[in-house]
Length: 98
Image 1 (cartoon, one colour):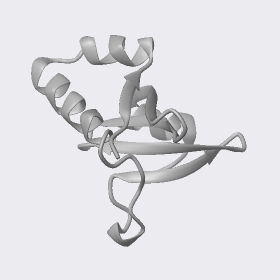
Image 2 (tube, rainbow, N blue to C red):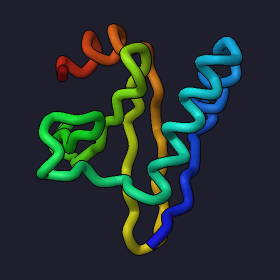
Image 3 (tube, one colour):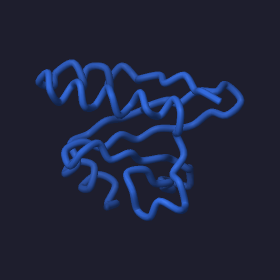
Image 4 (tube, rainbow, N blue to C red):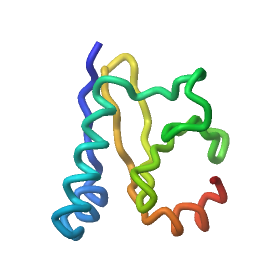
């Protein structure tokens, strides 16, 4: 099953402000969520993880060693909603996750 990946306005603005190489890397990684949005239990820590933030389940995707995306998966709508992309250091400060 394939999901539609939707980007919040803030995410589109963040990506648009990146240099061309970073923009390509971020977009390529976000596109991969269409085919496999969930963390794989057998993959170890990997690039995707389920988090609980303020009592709500949220997913995290590390993109290289530079960016972190946070997203929701809406099964009924077959959507992945990317709600935020941050510099990885800012993501760690804000959410306190590795």
